[in-house]
Length: 171
Image (cartoon, rainbow, N blue to C red; front, side):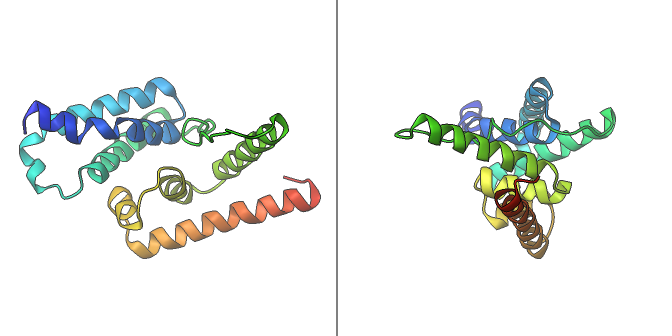
């Protein structure tokens, strides 16, 4: 693989890799380090890249594995908010609507942080990053039924908690 091919195939997913690593690690510098490590691993393994069907999914899998390795080394800690991956365009909204939307997104992020790890990862990959079910299977190294069940349970849990908050004002 040439440098130009590497740049055209791998660099375009840099921001997704960073957001995913940041989501898992909750630390800006750690996420940047993981993305750098991913690039190094991909570059060092460039001779075997012809065997890779989906470069983006493969890079996301490496990102997941390196991030989880770092978490194991540092002992588990909760992640920060997902504001980086959940930027919402507010064109044409009033300040009150903008504030309400921002508060809703913060509430959803907090509820996602309460989910079990696999559900949180699957929901992030599908609903925030926009990956297909098949790509999530490749990234997470789990089968399709596990992806669908995890996503269903994650969405259900967030929906139920939001309904309770809306109905009773309780978290």
